[in-house]
Length: 120
Image: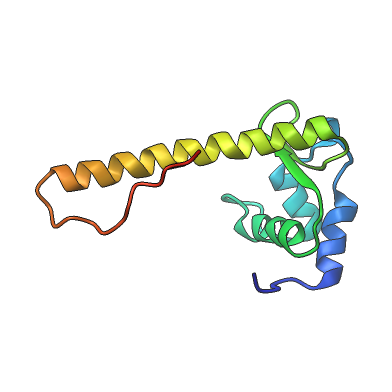
């Protein structure tokens, strides 16, 4: 993964995040604090978070409810809950992908070369 952000930008993100799920900060507010676009789905912010996780090894989690937002993972339970939510999203996306492949191939179209992914 390429470095799209300066170390200082990544550090600013970490300084803006609360520790633990109960301290989650919403994407719009976090984007505002960091000077990123606040409308839409905050692509720049999400790219920064992904980079912090994948390059720096930062433990950043996200929750979708009460409070929704991003946070620094503080314990094993928070880590495992977030990993489980990522797994559920992956499975759901894969089911939609499989349905699209099957629908396309079953409608008499030129067959796609994309294969069904079997997630264990």
